[in-house]
Image (cartoon, rainbow, N blue to C red):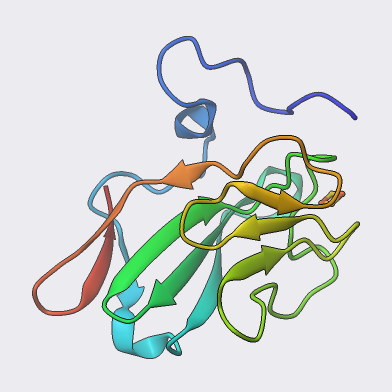
Amino acid sequence: MTGNPFAPPEDGPAWRRHPHAPAPGTALGRIEEIEDPGMRALSFGSGRRVFSMLLVRHGGAVRAFLDACPHAWLPLTWRGGSVLSADGRRLVCSNHFAEFDSASGQPVSGPADCGLDLLPVRLEPDGMIVMG
Ligand code: FES
């Protein structure tokens, strides 16, 4: 396993220091734009410094995860396509097929020995998903 490319979390989660991490209050899209169950991958910035995240919808609830697999710190979506299982219950890394619970981000099976980073989002009354 290679090291986390982000600095150690000494003053909050490491992802907050990423130069392209969306600021609190950033609108991420509307819940009805995501299938139920379904997911949407979002990217901020470009190139090697891109910040990638996943939104996962289950009914009226939305979770957000950093799109970085803790097995080898590659994006779950590295090989493209949806990484949500057909039943919506698991996120499956496209690299070596680690599986994570799509509600908690905790590892379920495969080579990852820890879970996905859960990102704070909130759902506004009008259906807009907003970074927390
Ligand atoms: S990088 Fe995800 S399972 Fe290896």
